[in-house]
Image (tube, rainbow over all chains, first blue to last red; front, side):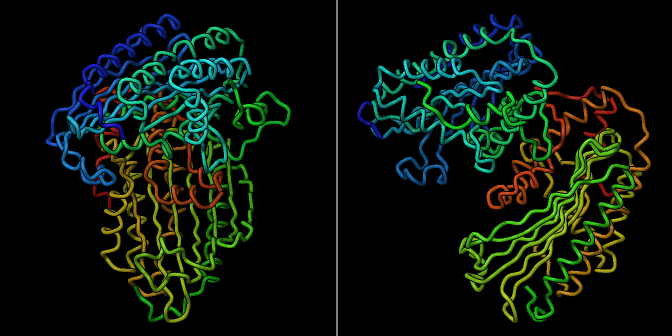
Length: 309
Length: 309
């Protein structure tokens, strides 16, 4: 944990970046969709333990996005609970804050992949004892995969991280594959991307810069795929498969995702957190795709981890 | 924990009862639906730790039930893992078995409630050191509630438990209200019913008899409601509300239900466990019913716990 330059840590600068990132992403998505996102700004009244505020930007029944949200949230507390500081006893009782931007987009057209992106940071204490870290990443969940889309998504992530060390993309790619894995299905959620957490090894300025690079790369990683696939025709069959596969997204987010579970247990912002859940979902018993069908190709060629970049 | 009559404990008798109960319930449901349930029998090969077998009886796209399952499972292990026996150290390393019947039915008509029922038992060790308990219950999840249905469901539960002590229904009714509660929504899953767990206080014979009484009451508790509501007309509005409310069922089962989470982590029978998830589900942002609408009545008159019997 780097503490040497912690006096440079500026929650205000991080907050400013995150709010600007949210706005830029929403503008880019609105241009693609044509329908404006609505805004749900919220403030959590101080209840003695936690306070916070946030801005949910939400779209439903858009031309392109059936449901999606780009959420900013900023939670502050006066004293770290002992349970949260067990592994870092120097933080017990210290003030802390956590903030981030998190997005999930569920397109209507099954040829356009679902996408998730998140950047976040945590700061506890202040001065030389301060502890901080960054986390983030993005991952893509196609229904009908295209090699060139996956290569583009991963190449964009790799390029964004390259200035911060050649090891970053391979490490964060592997971390992503490990994190977005449905153990009870023995199946990846999608084709991955990048994931990092508890990151401070480059010092504050460079760690923050790397996190910004990840956030800033999102529109470049995703919008070209949207443009390439949005007019691909589809029918009932593709919609049914999409609804079925969206069930996996629900299973992952409700059973495994730490951010979702932590949020549900602590924040009281259920609707903002469950913004990640798809609009229409289907479960059916022991369904398996016809061997050789376009649906089977997702399982054989896209869900097993591959080197995409 | 009663151990005095543990030599009477017969896993074979319990298994026999459970398989017969499953069969009787499926026959009753098939009569109501008209479509036969299919059977998925499975055996878990001994992998050194656990072995087991089961029978999933499943219906999809029935006349009445859009999706549903009545599952029997029986899992056996040669040695209790230390984590599972922490509070009962005498069980460490002892053989154990767990078996049960669990059902969830999702009717197509939104005027027919979703229902869940489960009876289960656990036995560890043998002879005078054996430990065993029973658990079970049933709960009803209406979309458009009717007072008389809720009263009938609860009255049937109460009557079934009456021979085992007047305290049982009120205790198990409260336990059910507490268990089937979505903390992140501050909302009950449905109108409750009965729930009990870790139950041995009546001794083996009577505890088993009480558990049988609960299981045997299921068809009497549910089928009259099905018959009364199955022909009520509905349209797109009612189907949309049903799909939306089914989202709560998914949230409960994936975030809170201990049986589901334990099963997903341990059994490898994902499809049987997730049989409880509805066929078509919808999420949308911060939806609220129009005050005074039939949908609002669910929230005002049925979800808050009431004395139904």
